[in-house]
Length: 620
Image 1 (spheres, rainbow, N blue to C red):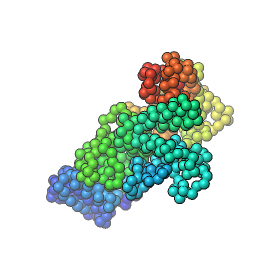
Image 2: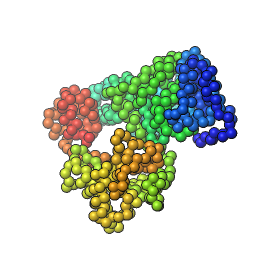
Image 3: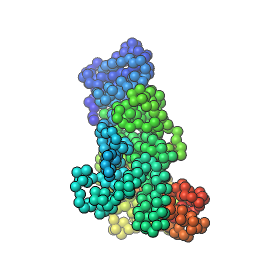
Image 4: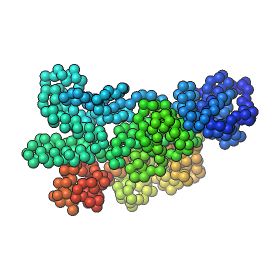
């Protein structure tokens, strides 16, 4: 949302006179423009101190300067405590939607999974709205997608009915769901009430986070069925075990009982993404990304704590139906969370704990959330910002006579010199041109010699281009410093490629995104762009894409080289251990996908043996 400029004819706000009489008590303040429209709502433990910070002579962030330039009036409301101020602030933000406040739009109720009651063969279904007595509910889930994913898994694994009673009561033959092995057809009596009840109980165990207990029970049933020569039934239990193990491999478990919200903040290119990972009963039920909105230029990097504080207040105070765990994990430290915790307890009767110092399983959850936030924000930036404008900005900062229409970027990836792969990615004014991406398997060079690997890749790439097998770029970006740039320039000179501008992209002294240094060709020096420069965002995008493309190629090459023997060929894994492994996981494919920690949970398998199995069977 764009904001109008301040009215030059309006009288300036008398901040000095206002601050002389304002209270030092806690409360909220409302800032208004000359036309009487609300600009901003804030809270303060000390109103005089907080409001004085807006009118200091220097050091204000761009967001604050833009706000202050439009203030014509400030109203304050005194409250008894800081907690009351926080609650009042959130109510006013929700009602008035001030343009300079961080705004969160998310008011949908949350869905559940339910099992109908009173039926001989209960139905599995999604539910949203008022709960009914006697019905078993599991959840809430973060969104409908998480529910549908869970329902699909339950239907495939336990073959429970999802059809309405009107359909169920009028069937005379099995439907398509039975034919594709997703329902046991209780409607026409193809399964007994006792067996169906067992399937329901197993599904409830899974939803309650008792997967380990369930797997052990299914393993016993599989062995019992096999002992009675009921091999088809044993195979069914085996498939259920395998399905459960696949789900467990995708999730990080903490004792099977943890209820946690994991909140990660990522900022890039003037935008912010807050990603929430929902952990219930130790299982990851789903996630959701939020993109806080503001009417001003969003340089969130100035104060990530302010953004997270505003987000947490709106997210947990404005949605009383929201399911709240007792523990919230945060990617950034936020001061003043005591008042927020008290406000939530006062409103919902539930005390929240906030934690930022993480380790073990909780740290792994946070890493998942941070990765998702980063990827979603990158996708949002790519869709929101016009790539052509970024090219035009690059033309301007490099002082080029014409618009560059094609960029290429090289990167090298290896593991301590093993399976070295070079990538070349291509961007045009429409974005990534993936049909022109190329990878080069590097051979014949000393392992770990990035200079030689880069030289080989560039020579192979531009020898082909010189022969007319492609189009030369306007700008060639090298992910590296002066050494890599000089080597690239030497190769291009040997190949008589003279019309390509070559630039190195070094990480800078802090090695953080936004502080990259551009190494200019022909020893012209270096250039550092501001963190909000569209030209820098374009360079970061293509550099990160070349990095991703190189790593993917390297992993594929390394995995192909490392792929090795089957379970029977692993030293120290005899018949008893193989039996326990297959009993626990259900099949060789599931053993391949298991982590070292999962393998070590199997009886007779020590941590050392688990590491040997993992190395022999797993590609990672």
